Length: 264
Image (cartoon, rainbow, N blue to C red; front, side, top):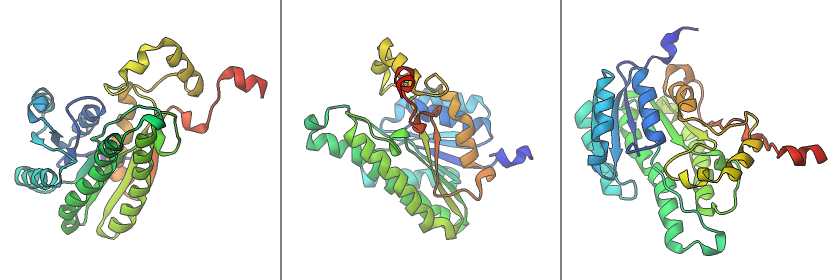
């Protein structure tokens, strides 16, 4: 297979939520594959170091302010992005948040924060950027989901609702925009250590329990997502749309703890 299928030279990728965490890993992977980057955060100043890092790789980069809960902010960001680079070829809908609470303790505001950020924000960013992709009859939209797009976990009610919604939204948008040459897919990571969940990884017993449920016997490392993000952004995935690609070490197979499995 020709390596040109994965070459993103001359393309522009817009990634939301790149002040830290997986968003920056997605950006690095796409930049190394040849893409120029538009990176965003609610506070533009938090992007300075990462913008410099991308430019050091030989790619063009621009930082823009974006609050995905504010429709006017989305529209303003899109206008600035097109002014900076013209055509946007790739969108990675990565901005997200979480509130961990037992279901009985989730407040109205907790629910709105998570759903407005993860689901409504992703839809309206995609809608705004797709309007610019349609005239070119080309686009790659990658919504970031989670293993919780296909599985439920206690204490994550709003989050799992938002990520399940992302999976369904992905299929709907793929059907809407496929005739315009735009693919829409969902990249669903499993358990990866991020700033949002760092405290959970400080519990050695929990980490051991998690590893027992993962067939590959370890949590994900950020670079484990590099191949998947480049695949979904590139010509290699040109006939793939409406799909959810789980990169989870196999935890979605429903693997049980070894002690339970032995009794079964």
